[in-house]
Amino acid sequence: MINEAKARSVNEQFYEAFNKRDIEAMKRIWGYDEQATCVHPGWPPLKGFESILNSWAGIFKNSGNMEIQISDVQALASSDLAWVSCTEKLYTIAEGGVLASPVFATNLFPLEGDIWKMVMHHASPVPDLQEPADVSRN
Image (cartoon, rainbow, N blue to C red; front, side, top):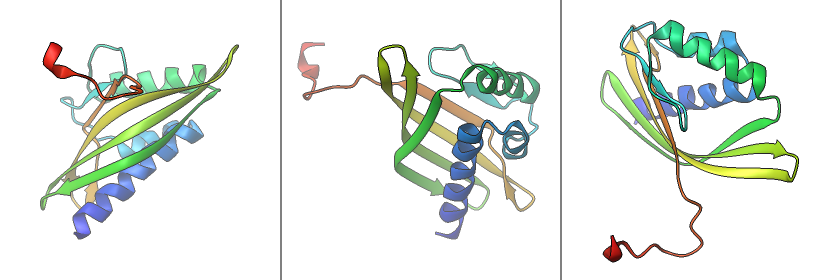
């Protein structure tokens, strides 16, 4: 239970760094592992600390009108690995008004020493369904 709470906390720090466009905070959250992976919605996977931080720097520079709010947070942790999933609501101010895009994210945090470090962020857009989908037709 303690590890889940710590994983939730670092997950919240990740979204706070995004909303504040704080690249230094984002650097502290991510692990330096070259196998670290980040998948932004609609992007190909990015590998390695440098590539991932460069992507965040670009997003921060070009996303002054974006904010993420999270919900449905689920955390599971062992003694050295935490998995957190959540629904992101990505708000963007566009010419036609405020757009809200639902995104599902999975974040992985191994324990490095006594600090949880992100090594995977995978965010995928999800349809904004008004009624339940009939999967029997697929």
